[in-house]
Structures are given as structure tokens and as C-alpha cells.
Length: 257
Image (cartoon, rainbow, N blue to C red; front, side, top):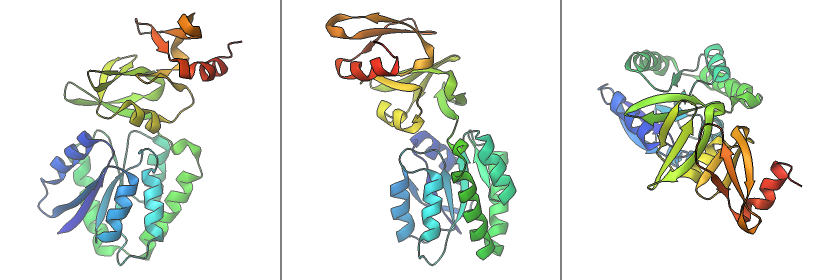
């Protein structure tokens, strides 16, 4: 049996990959992890053959997890299949270094190809693999473009890759995080704070505890009570508040004198 672990900060993504992997009788899913720290702790305590590792996780990325694993003094360094959401630079690097990857949304055909490659690699794995993985990590870490440019979101039971530049704003509705884009409305199955940490880009701003906005879409700013502001975004009809605690930073960002 091939002992596997799934690492992804999104529960639906983990569930989908588990469903696909369970179709293969020689794959045994030993553990799941929802973040990089949890994954590293599990790796220390378990012997694994392969880790299906999402690159784009907040705080500790998949690249950082893989880098740390190479430094562990463990009996067996697991093979790593990276998971990414259409990061062109990373894909090029994976191809050059013969390390496999899966693109979200993951399909049966592509997964089968990756698993066949995995089975072959397990029979021939040695120090050359670890050298290739180390080289790949250094290459990607040395290029700032490895930070992902897309987010894969759910709508009507389907997955859609959305470019970050097309996200207008995100808000909390009925305890769910809703993302408004130029192509429609999507659900994000985590908190707004989680989304903010994951995006981690300068053009997104937390104007209020319930709103994360893309400042590139600001159409007008309306002065409001108690020296606060309301914001009108292109592509979104309702006015968005700037909380009192955020006013000073907002004025600096928007160069309001």
C-alpha cells in the first residue's frame, strides 16, 4: 500500500481529493492536515510514501513545508505531489525538475497520470529525487512570482479558478464568506480573516471586520459620520463602510489629506 497524506487549508478540496484517491485500492490515506504546521507535526510522527501538498496556504506555504521536510532527520523522505491553482511559473519549474503537480480543479485523468508516475518513482526513489526537490524549492523561493495569482472558488457544486485581480470584494453573509468577482458571486469555505491571510496582496484592504475590498475597484469615497467613510466599488451596488479603527490607515493608503 502507498501511504499518503493530504495537505490543504480548504476542507472541500481535501474531501474532493480524498474521494478521487479512494478509487485507487493501493492508496491508503493515513492523515489529513489543514495547514503547514499541522502537516509538519504529522510528518515527524508517521512514515509516509507521498504527500499531496497544496502550495498556497496561509502562514506556512506548501513550498515551505517541503523545504522543512528535506531538513528532517527521518527514516524516509516522502515523495511530494504539489497542488496548485494555475501558477504558470510553478508549473514550468515542476516540469523542468520532474516533480509532479496537480492543477485545481483536479480531474481523474490527470490524477491517474500522477499516480502512475508516483508508483514508478517509489520503485526508483533515491538521493537524486531529494536533490531535484531541493533544487525546485530554491528555484521557486528565489522567484517572487511563485505567490499564486488565482483562487479556486465554489459555485453550484463546481470549482472555478478566479484571478485575484478579478475579485472586487469579500464579505460575511449569514456566517458564510461570500466573494464578489467580475464574473459573479462565489462561496469561500473559510473565514474572512483566513481569506485575507491567504491573499496577502497589497491591493486588498480590510476596511471593516465584515469587508475585504480590492482598492483597485474603488469608484468613489463618501465622507460619513464620526470622520469615517463609505466606499462605492465598481461592480458592487451597496456602499461599504470604513470602520473608525481603520480610518487612519485608509486615509494613508488612499492619500486623503
